[in-house]
Image 1 (cartoon, rainbow over the protein chains, first blue to last red):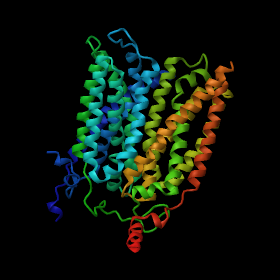
Image 2: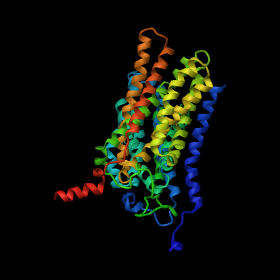
Image 3: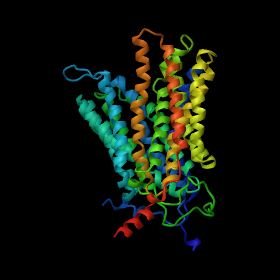
Length: 40
Length: 453
């Protein structure tokens, strides 16, 4: 029964996480750059 | 034609990994979180001239954001029940369509200098997208992660905090890109509407609901657990009649009102309290740092609540929060320490975000997962209320000091002491939370109706 299961590919999971992580990381990077002004 | 949106079609096949669900939810929350960065459009909108040379006032432009947030709360409360029957995929699709098309209608408003169209587009249509998008993945995540509901909802709601961090640089860069065009704001909004719509479509096509009876591999529900964790279902209308719903409403309202007190006034507050030491640019950095704490707090506190329990988590927020609100003026006035002030404010904002992210799991504990999105939607009216009450307190006290020619710095300790008092109210409300009475359980309600026949 288990052999018939169409398991989700780890690559697909990684791609899905990258798709949301990349824009989020881009936003965090800009926010960090802005936050650093407090310590300059 | 749109049958692929039906709940039945979105049931996961055997072997589907639940780890695809959080990114699907994140794509929705990262998009709609853009609303928190709306302030970047304020100055460009104020400079926008009509055909007759007319300009909009700050108050008129400010209403755009207020309408969007008010409609968010209303639509989350109104459409929550529909979402439970329609399923997350259909709700996410409608959210994406509303949020994306809201930008397009608002763009038409910016191009024709019609504020009414911007109110309708970004405020009303976009606001429905915000409300539906905010609650749509919640119950699905809870069903996929019965072992870690706090972690799952924390991940998604963290996205809402992170959305502003993407929306702000994206909007600024697009406005610079379209600077030479006839309608830079309209072009920016058309681009953002399309980008966000397609980004949200990833969530629409990826989301799945678990099969009936599915549970994580190897997971055995605990036989002994806190009395607050319900094994029963409570329907949304019945939940709204319980004292627990209104106690949680008060808990969320107090936590958010106090947090908004800092967030709304963060930049002028640090400049007023450290006059001559913190510039306007450094204050902008402080605001950026607070948004990072806000985002991180959503994930960290909600995940931690899976281990220490929801009630304990809110006790931490209210007890620690009360001391920190009292310590904040001390860090500025007596110790004159900028790093300590920033650290205390950051911790407070992390708990503000944590309060938002932990509430769905608290609802699930009390009312079960059956109608949790709909109940969550109704509870979000506490957010709308706090959005009005918080700034009213802060601006009311500040206006009083300014009108009486008193130093503005002296107003902040008063404001922060009021926030500490709100923490006490929240603490008492949390203390009063008890398990939901049997008469509200779905099975019990059905049997009562059957007995009455």
